[in-house]
Length: 312
Image 1 (tube, rainbow, N blue to C red):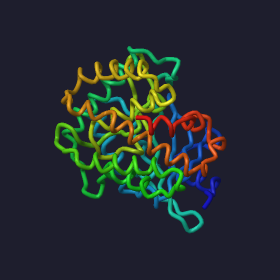
Image 2: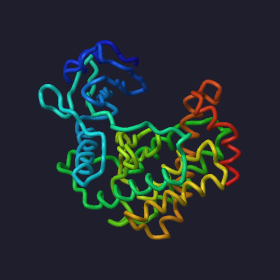
Image 3: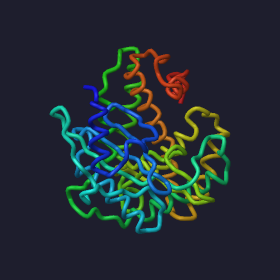
Image 4: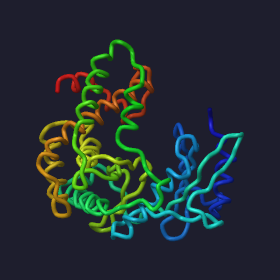
């Protein structure tokens, strides 16, 4: 079902006191519209999502954690209240319900892969280490705000039907999911994680990171969060030397803020593989195996990807 973009945007703007003339850009996905606006010194972005995909309580769980992290000294993109003082608003358009939430735009400079260097990797690791150290003390303010755990997305992917030609990929994913499900969970290794930590989701002022886009946050192992950062930083350049450079710099920074036992660091390749195979399955399904139809990153990622997965 397609969005009624205009009515949704107009209603969302009115709820948050935004001016249509200040719209900078908007991006549509399967379930959401994200629109950026000029406002104040740094601007805001408005996220409109099908309530069937993200309920009000689920988003309040995201916001609850963001505010907790902010209280612990981490720079994050904080929520903006609506004209009625609400953190999340509900909109009904064409008999379908949507949620609306608004966030401050992150202050600082956007990062590109051109900026990749060991110094940046250390800062990224230190930020994540500080986030993991803080989240060990997080308690949601309402039982209704509980975020999903790692298995929710994994099981959705596992249930995607691919042709028989991809059976080896699906079997590898199922086996990996089974193994990871046996891993122990404790206060020291498991908690709420960002789950989408990459250079496209933070800005920098000097050496200080401001993180945003917490939409994917979920309960999982801290090693999973690290693996996701490694995956995004090296997915299109999987050479061992480049991956090692990123991991070494990232973990050097991470260890300044949080200690993770070596046995968990040894699990990072398994979490990377889970993310890599899961992304392959989703992109194969989205394109029906016609990778030339994918966006540039997806096309580059899928090039020889099956062979790489089965080789490891």
